[in-house]
Image 1 (cartoon, one colour):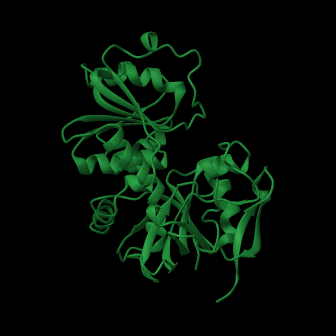
Image 2 (cartoon, rainbow, N blue to C red):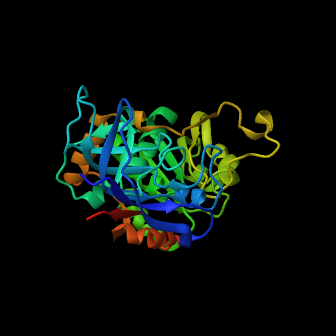
Image 3 (cartoon, rainbow, N blue to C red):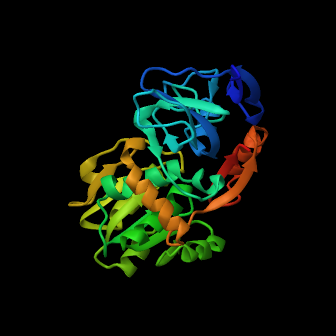
Length: 330
């Protein structure tokens, strides 16, 4: 077997020109880790943040970016339940930050963050799912404990997580209100099954309460600190708001005072999550639901080959098309 592989390596911070394809050593297994032959991966906003040097303190260069991928097992410990050729997904757990990630022909990760799956869906569809479905699913379950018949507000509805959350929430049986800043994207939300798409001008609490006078049951905050207080004001007493995303890049609330900020009785939670929050049986059910047409996957564009990673990051950064940008390795 070859001792090297091709990978997109970030050696210094800056623009997309800093993403350079190189021949690098094939990553070696550690105890209780597996090596995955990468078939497809989604391109994420956090990877753009890392490329610009604005990532978490554990991020160092040179680094192979990529916080998620799908592929097949190339090598696994002999005493594991995983076998070469088996289809798997993996995400987060330091990928692309403290350890090399998925912008490569192969990647190695701990077995604990590997999700086996079986499906005949094409790689570009499955490759769009791991991070956005895990984040959406974890937010709706662990973050909000969403139940059938409840009302859900998704703030940042045309983000990848927002689009996924809408489809999963409808599968649960919730009534979904979802926001967009652009009127031309209202139809996209309706086509996904959103019950009430609304334009977000930064202050939507009064609009939401006209629709639900008592306030909504649950809210998924994906825009960030800029809109969080308004989202809280749209939520009923004993309802829950889950802070998951920072599309506005506002992760910190200056001079935060709970008594003056959180309406009395409204619950505020947060969600970050890991691969272990998306059990294999849940992920496989989602794949079956997609194959059956019950769940929709929003894919902005599919790119072929590591040479297209720069284009994928550029397209994601300008946000011209909602949905996931997916790179497939042929």
